[in-house]
Image (tube, rainbow, N blue to C red; front, side, top):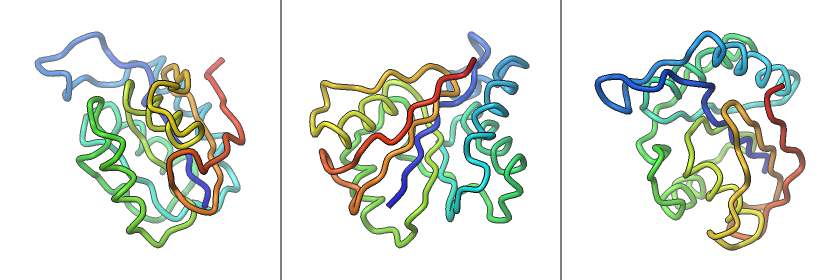
Length: 152
C-alpha cells in the first residue's frame, strides 16, 4: 500500500475558531508545489480533515492532479485525533493508494508511528510537507518512509 500524508498549507493565524482558519496565498502556493510531487501517482482516494484549511488543501491537490473522484471528509484527521482511530479506519478500506490531508500534531505522530512503531518519534512536517509511505499493510512499525518533501 502507498500512503501519502500531506499537512495543509500555511493558514491564517486566527479566525473565529481553529477549524475555520483559511489558507493564505503563500499556503496555496505551497500546496500547489506539494501537488506536483503527486503527479503520475495512481491515487484512488483523497481523505481530508473537516477543517477549512485541510479542505482547501485537498481541493487544490484534487484540481492540480485532475483527480476525478471527490474529496472524502473524515472526522479522524483533525489535529488532536488518535492515530489508532486512523489505523482502524484505514485497515477497513480497500484502496491501495491513498492521500490523507491533515494537521500537526496528528500527521507527524501518525507518520512516525507507522514507520517506527512508536508514537514518540514523530516525522517533522512543516506546512505543505508531503510524506510518502509504503508497506504491505498500514500498521504501526510496518511502513517505510519512501520520501519526505518540504515546501521550498
